[in-house]
Image 1: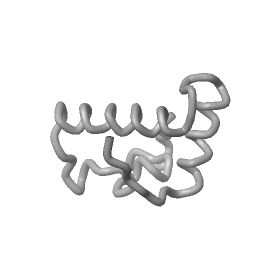
Image 2: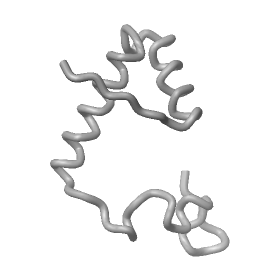
Image 3: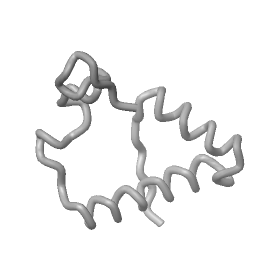
Length: 73
């Protein structure tokens, strides 16, 4: 199996470590392989996201849906 080296943000590393600690995965390697595989399958199913749909570009990330009194939970 080919080996790949990546650098990920610390918050993702912490989430992966927590999943391994909870027993959702045997180890980090299995977690990363499974999560990457799941992401690729989802990408193939839904296709690439446009800039408008991609995370981090809308008011939703601020907890707002465009109105001062609407919050996203």
